[in-house]
Image (cartoon, rainbow, N blue to C red; front, side, top):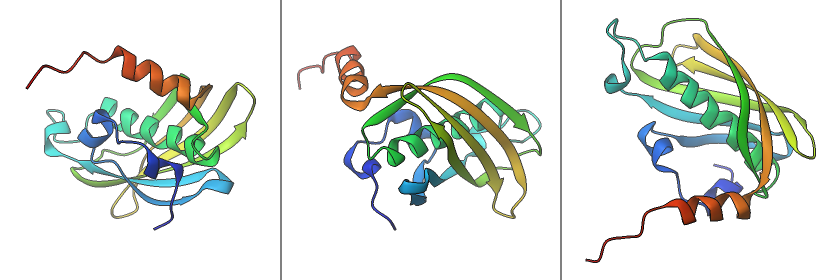
Length: 151
């Protein structure tokens, strides 16, 4: 497994919920592959992973593509994201891939896709994301958290 800037930060709770884990990355190319767990708890009444969950997986793939490409210097705040649902997602492993298509000074453009274990293309997405210095983004997150209760 390749080492990336993601190794140096804790996995956010929402990513842990999704079963997020890095499978492969080519940071210099702005490409990443992420594994997710399509849990039965994520299913709609028809038994398929709900679309909003798939969108979260796509978002949690495209942002890290930028983060690794910039060696952890830039964090993304999604401006727009367009998702195309192509096939129902059965519960089970889901793989996300993303590629940075353009990295500007203040905005990045990224393409993403989700596939099932059998190779079925489940969804695609494009996003435009505002670039924020990671130190500022993480400081803002930490300061917004409630204080820990005494033990």
